[in-house]
Image 1: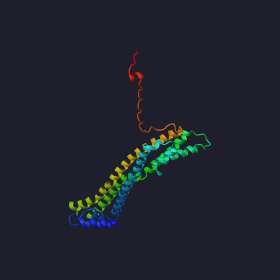
Image 2: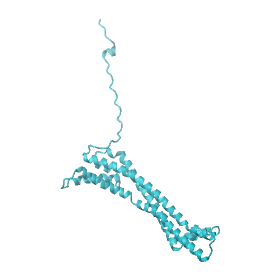
Image 3: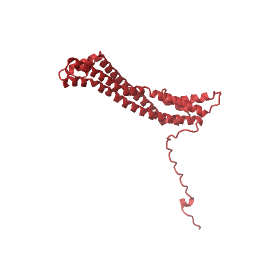
Image 4: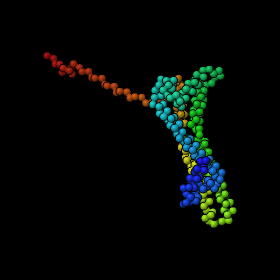
Length: 264
């Protein structure tokens, strides 16, 4: 239904000035061209949905990192710091998983170094967060790689139908060939229009994910150092500048106060 409406609208808008266009290409291309157009439209819609949803998700993690830098390491211990973070914070997940791993290590029957156990647990938690942030990016990569070829397929079908129609009519003049063939190239252009934004979005989101992953890795190492040292090792945080100590007032001697006494 959508394809029919678009084709009818395009044909009505340009029927007098130009007999060729998107509407005519969909109408003349038949079911295959209409299917290709529908697939490209769906690819574009889903790509933009993934782009905006991932930007929103990434911005949440970036804001969480700002709150961690502001006051997390000023807490007495990790449990107090964890209580200051949002319930669904990625950084809270790292802290809670580290604390849980520390408790689990006490119940192990086989001797395992605490550092190795904590490092493995934090690495799994960090990988789970990064995997969630990377969800949907594979679709963007797929769209960027396949959309031009899907559009090209529509173009090939359009050219094939145009040549068959020209051959059956017996007219091989340049005006009879150029119009239908040029009309079929619209599908290739649509494929590129869908693919280019998907590739740009994929690269942009990947770069932002890499920056977030580096920050999560640094925070994970800080948590590991804190747990492995029982709180003795923690990152340096900005502390409020202490008020300068006023110098002690100089005491005056009796001679300075009343002058030098002379013997009578």
